[in-house]
Each structure stands twice: as C-alpha cells, then as structure tokens.
Length: 227
Ligand SMILES: NC(=O)c1ccc[n+]([C@@H]2O[C@H](COP(=O)([O-])OP(=O)(O)OC[C@H]3O[C@@H](n4cnc5c(N)ncnc54)[C@H](OP(=O)(O)O)[C@@H]3O)[C@@H](O)[C@H]2O)c1
Image (tube, rainbow, N blue to C red; front, side):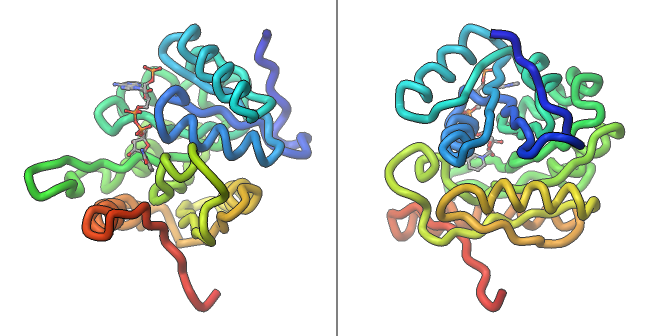
C-alpha cells in the first residue's frame, strides 16, 4: 500500500511515523497512537520487517498501522518519532536528513550505557541525543519526549496509570503538537518541560527510573504534581 502523508498544515491529525518502529518502544508507541485513532507508519531498515510489525500490531487490535522503510515512512509522515538505539542514532539521522526536512521530529532516545551497577547516562558531545538530532537535522523541528514511559507498559495491558510525558524543545508550536499526541494516549499527559537544552536531564532521568524499577520490581512512570 502506498504511504501517503497528510500535510502538516492542513491535516486534522498529523500522520505519525516511527523510525525503528519494529522495536519495543516503537511498537508500543505505534500501538497506543493507533488505539488513539492516529494514522501510524512503522519504519524499519527493512521494509518487510516493518510490514510484519504493522500486521502484528493490526492483528492485536491496533488498526490503521502500515509499514515501510524508515525513509519511506519519514517522507510520508508529518511527525516522525525516533525510536532506535542510541548506538544507531546519529548514523540514521544523518542518512535521513533530506527525508526529515520540514518534519516535526520527536526524539525519545536515551543515551545510556550499562555496567554491573545498572544503566547510567553517557556523555554526548552535543549535550543530549535530542540536541544531536537538532544539530544533524537543521531543516527539521526537533522535540524530545516519551523517554520515561516503559515499552512494556505501552505494549501490554490496560492504559498507563496517570503518567506524564515530559516534552522539551525550543519550538512552542511543535511542543504543543507533541503534547497533544501524548494527551491522545489514554493514561498519558503531555507536560511542557522547557527548552531543548534540558533534554540531557530528561534523558538521564531514565537511568533513575530504571533503578527504581529494579529496586521495586515494577514499571515506574513519572508524575509531576502541582499542574
Ligand atoms: N524500551 C523502552 O522501554 C524504552 C522506553 C523509552 C525510550 N526508549 C528509547 O527508545 C529507543 C528504542 O528502544 P527499544 O527498546 O525499542 O530498542 P530496540 O528494540 O533494541 O531497537 C528498536 C529498533 O531500532 C532498529 N535498530 C536497531 N539498531 C539500529 C541501528 N544501529 N540503526 C538503526 N536502527 C536500528 C531496529 O529495527 P530494524 O532492525 O527493523 O531497523 C529495532 O527494532 C532507545 O533509544 C531507547 O533509549 C526505550
């Protein structure tokens, strides 16, 4: 099926693509966004793998998902979520810079490394994965979000339990679009958490949440009080 994207300016709801959409986090976000009625395109380095992931999500009840190569789905979408491992982040974005021009790019990548004591943030020359994305994609609008919500929670069971999605970025309109996407998913709330330069702490916080998960044998989420 051809991938036809709606115009970001005119569409009632933006078409969302997920790069690395065959992985845990990508499939989880695709599933929840499709359940929220959004058109979702699952991307992969391999089109057949993407189509299979889309078909499996569809068979599981998440309608409206199609698959294609990362480049194809990026071109066809208005909003493109980056859900690949940190190790492949820079190379993929460099490759897709033309396909992502004019798109709203949502980075959920956590640059973490593990040792015997668990995960910890890695030093990123640009400051954060999201700032690296912004540096590599000067023709895209980059926002960072969805770092703390566990893929397992997105993929399984009922809705998340009153969980906040911290959204950071320098473009207010783009942040608003991403907060609306978060709000569309049952159980999630988008929270404007400031400019892109704060992304390093949002990304690093994931190591803290994983530590909590290990200690309490749970899938913890984040909730900001007072708003
Ligand atoms: N898992 C979570 O709970 C969670 C929560 C929040 C944020 N995140 C973030 O989301 C991202 C994805 O996490 P994940 O657990 O879904 O990872 P994953 O399952 O290991 O990988 C996701 C997908 O990325 C593609 N990929 C793998 N290596 C790649 C490379 N070198 N270059 C380009 N694409 C590559 C693969 O798809 P193809 O082989 O089909 O191309 C894979 O299915 C990570 O950056 C993580 O920090 C994860």
